[in-house]
Image 1 (tube, rainbow, N blue to C red):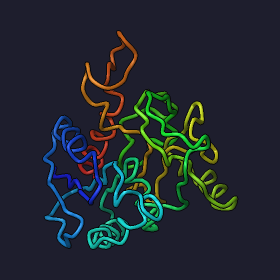
Image 2: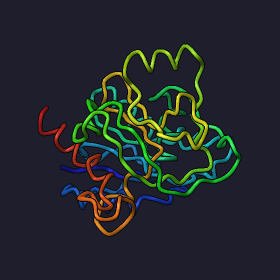
Image 3: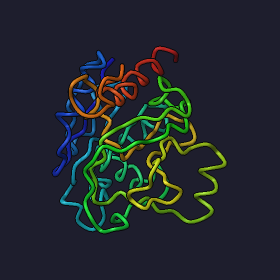
Image 4: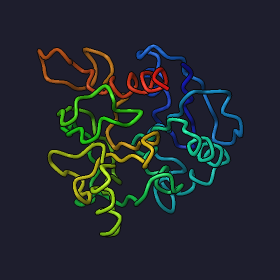
Length: 230
């Protein structure tokens, strides 16, 4: 399986996403924001960072990049797409997911291990989790407050498109939303840095638990399983 990892100006986590893909047993393919060819990849990841310095709005300028237009077309045909942190913000700005992000409620950058609840394990990126599972993952964001109009929020809840939810809403997100999917379940955005929690002894995890620091690994294993079951 080949997974494309897209780098934009200001992307900071491409190396981490690449490593996570490799740990999960797949091949990482490096893609550049000006590319118009996805090089035959089976899935795409938009990593975290601060694309274009988060100028205007986080992800707003990156969403205008040539490769995002290509990804939108491929996603409409079923290509699995994952946005992490700033990548999630790009997905929203590009219209692949609804809503938008603003500064955290307390106006401070957050960098800490955080617990989340897996609300939906029927997406291309979450099928290896148990529904309702609690996971510990790094959260690293200054713009993690998810916002949407009341009708959109109701639609997301009614359709089960909330994928990940904060146990403690540290950013102030509407409905404690930390992850979303599109209707088809192939496009997913998460604020958690799951790519920093794929190897035991590194990242997060409860000391002495069987998971160690690997609570994020299932995300990358899930997409491989999803493609195998196509």
